[in-house]
Image (tube, rainbow, N blue to C red):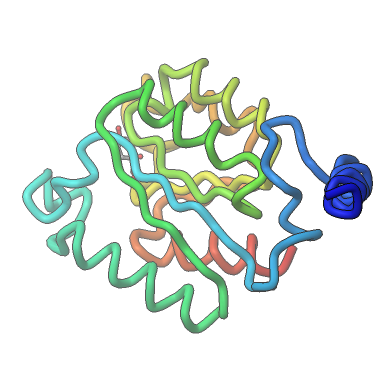
Length: 176
Ligand code: DQA
């Protein structure tokens, strides 16, 4: 019993410095899988790709985009988790939960790009390498789309390259 208690105390003492703010163990210390893990977030209405203004966003649907991202990730030898939500708070929760779990975030915040201080703050809080991607070139569209809150934090912003923008974003995060 004494031996077990001493052993447990030693494990706690040795591991304590490697446990991060959220209580999750640092991935570098405990993770046996050294593939980079990237969280891909798509914001509101992107689930309607194909149906949604095809002249702007293309004829391919959201399932095709997800398959495209998975194929790129496989080629780059990175692990991806795909996440889509139409709700700002849900996206904030997902970004917060990424801390200590993912190595980077690829995000198309969609309409929240232009309105969400909360998403910007969440990205700054977890401070993970982040790439912002947009299917269309927001700099040449309506005036209200030209400003991006997320760009104030993202290390890279890719616009107007359709699905290929996601590929470029993954490549950037994979080589960090
Ligand atoms: C978008 C551009 C945004 O302005 C728009 O609200 C979207 C999609 C893009 O991928 O081009 O929903 O982020």
